Length: 132
Image (cartoon, rainbow, N blue to C red; front, side, top):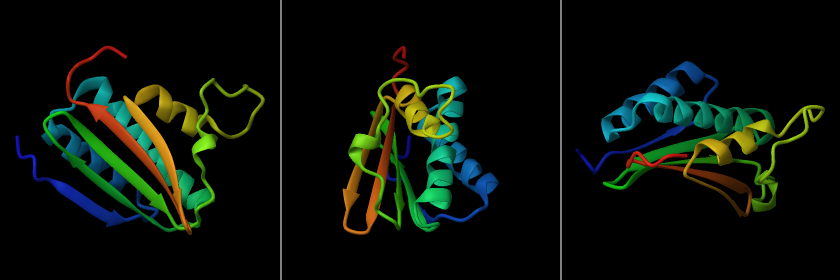
């Protein structure tokens, strides 16, 4: 396994290309099956959040080591905060918030950090096949 792989690119509205890039690197890292699909889904959700709520601009970074694969999605608005993480499933009558909840359900690690003018979602998947 090549552990030096690190990709970084600007967010665009081309979600097909995004999903392809994430799937390619995650597969190279050794992620497969439903965990690969879970990662592609949550990264897609994070990027949609940037496009709709995070200033419309940002960066995706993805890398892996022998233990896991990490994706960071940074926006240009900086309004997302750590307390926005949903620990319980949002109500069916709530029109928003499922993406953040889903990230917490599907990833082994999920965090939000806030810097001046930016917010960052960090998603991590273990490469060990641990049950969820």
